Structures are given as structure tokens and as C-alpha cells.
Length: 149
Image (cartoon, rainbow, N blue to C red; front, side):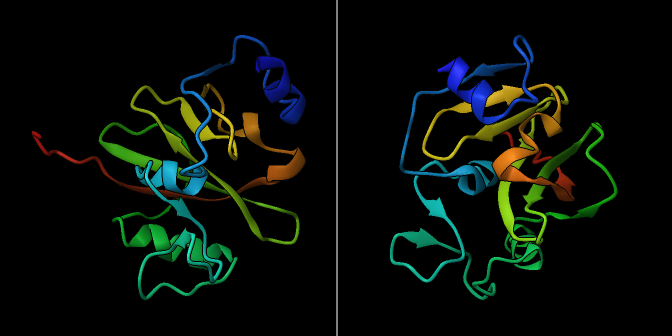
């Protein structure tokens, strides 16, 4: 499977990512970034796709920003690791249609759900850039949860 992922994302070089889960079709990258592994998040009008209530159901960067705004995320200037801040990166195609979301891990590396395939941890956010996912269009951040549970 490592070879397949490297073929899909040529920017990922050996040793710069690892598979962290088995394949799972219940959730996608948007849900994974949101911390939800029970549902498929996408703004399409579909009984199979979840989208936060009152957020416009359109494939636009602003709609994705608004969806993550319901989780406490706001636009931030970069994907650089900041202590106490959780970040996500919204990727978009050249015509500005969202294609993927990655979430930053506590150590500053990133995690992505690759479609219906596995979740991966990758060192560089842009490791999954290019090809089908396009480039990072926006970074969002929120204070890390301080819950003791």
C-alpha cells in the first residue's frame, strides 16, 4: 500500500510518511480532520454526507472554513506548529474547489485520510499536495482542547 500512496502523491518520499490505520470507508479526510470517524463529511446534498447545520452546502473554500468554524477554527496565517494551537489545512484545486483537509498533529507533523484508503501521518503538509489534491488554500487554527476527559 505504501507504493500506491507514493504513486498517488509523488511528493511523499519514503520515510516521510507512515500508514496509521486500516482502510475505512465510513469517513473521509474532512471528517478525519474534524475528529469524526463515524460519518462522511461533504457539502453535497446527499443523505449519505454530513455537513454542519446552517453551513452553506457548496464546494467552496468559504463553506469549508465555515464548517470548521462550527468547531472553533478560524483563519490563521500559516501551518507552522504553534504550541497550544490545533491546525487544519484546506487543499483546493487550481479552480479553488476544495479537495482535501489535513490535520496537524501535536508534534507538528500532519495526518491525512486518503479518500477511502488509510490514514497516514506525514512530515510536510505539502506532502499530499499536487496531483489530485492541488495546493493548500487556507490554514485554520483553534486553541487546543484542555478537557481532562
